[in-house]
Length: 110
Image (tube, rainbow, N blue to C red; front, top):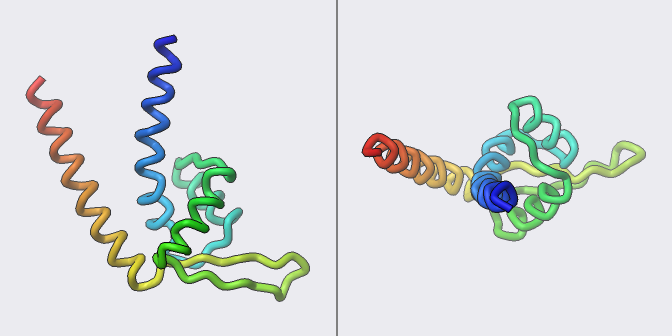
């Protein structure tokens, strides 16, 4: 039972950071599978079933530019940060750094 609780909490923590990871990786144009590979190369594991809905949500929130490449036999949708996405990423990075400082301070006091 304890392992399930820990696993659930860890999943929540990871979910909260996935947006930051995906936005960071989308500084360059990527399609879904290439993004999965890029993240994996950097040691970030994210399930395709999590990534694709996240990409659609970030696109609908106006943080990404998306274009279809139909030059290949299989069309691919490419995503890249737009200006609003870059500003949001910068703000999220600052927020993340503040959180890390707070947590480090909290852990130091133990």
